[in-house]
Amino acid sequence: MTNTIPTGTKVLVTGATGFTGTVLVKKLVAQGLQVNAIARATSNITPFDGMPVTWFRGEVYDESTVQVAMKDVDYVFHVAAAFREAKSTEQDYRNVHLVSTQLIVQEALKNPGFKRLVHVSTMGVHGHIPNPPGDENSPFSPGDGYQRTKVEAEDWLREFTSTTPFPFSIIRPCAIYGPGEKRLLKLYKMAVAKVFPILGKGKCWYHLVHVDDLTNAIILAATAEKALGEAFIIGATEPIRLEDMAAIIAKEYNTRLRILRLPIGPFFLLGDICEALCRPFKIEPPIYRRRVAFYSKDRNFSTRKMQDVLGYTPIWSNEAGIIESARWYRENNWLQIPQAS
Image 1 (cartoon, rainbow, N blue to C red):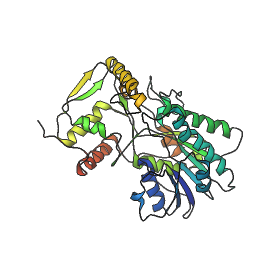
Image 2: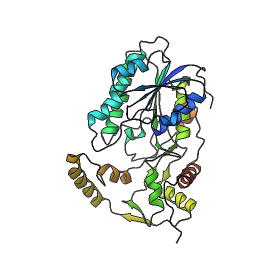
Image 3: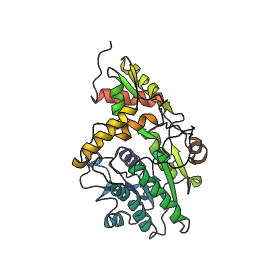
Image 4: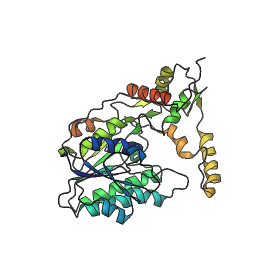
C-alpha cells in the first residue's frame, strides 16, 4: 500500500483508543504524520506512551472538544463508535455516530485546505443478506440502535454534501478481528469448549476483516481519487461459515470440535425475558435478542468494489488471520486450551 499523505500533515483520529483506532494511530505515526486524537477522560492512553500523539480529552460529540482538536487538521479518520451496553440509549448512539459527524464537518468547513473525512460506518447497516452476496448497494436494514444511528450518520453526510461540496469517503468494515481483539474472543473460547452451539438451521455466513487490512484500507481511502464520495465494504476476499471458522480454531488448538445445533426460537424468547428483567437495573443480560439473532443472519458480501475502485486487495486470508489470532490468544493466556480427548 502506498500512502500519499505528505509527511508532517496534521490528521485527527476519533475512537483512537479502541481496537481499530489503536492500530490506525500507530500506523499514521509511523508514517510521519502529526496525529491529533480525541479520547474520553476515562480512556486508557498508556499504550501510546512515548508516541508523538496530541490528545484531546473529551466526548467526540462535545462541540468545544471537536473544535480544538480540528484546528488546522487536513484529514479526519472518524473511527469512533458507541459501546453496545445495556445502559446505552438510542440518543447515546446518535451522539457518538451522528452528532459527532455533524460537528466534524462543521469544523472542517472552516479550513480551506481540508482534504478528506474518512467516515467509518459498519456492514451492519445492511442487516441480513437474504440473497448473498450483498454489496454497497444492498438496502439498509439496521437491526438495532447502534446500526440505525450509523445509517443516520451516512444519510446525513450524503444529504448535506448534495448541496454543500465536502470531501468524504465511507468505510463499512466487516467483523473486525486480529491479535488483541476482545469481541470475537468468545468464539475462540466456544470452539475449544465441550460443545460449539449453533442456533437454528442457517449457514451462518460471517464476513471477517483483519484489523491490518482494515486500517490499510482506511488510510488508502483518505487519498484515493476514486474513493471520493464513495462507500466501501471492507472485508476478506471471501466470507466464511461460522462452523468452518470454529474448525480452523479447533485444529490449531488440537482440540475436538463438537457442533451442537439447537432450535433458535426458545433462545429468542429467553433473550427477551432476560433483557426485560435486566433493563430496569441497567445491567448486561446474560443473553439477549441481538446475540441470538447473530445466528439467523448471513453476513456475506462482495468486496469487488474495495478491490476494483479503492484499489485494495486484502493481505490476510481468513485461515491465516484466524490462526494468527488463535496463537496470540494462547501465547498471551487469554484462553485456556483443554487437553485433546
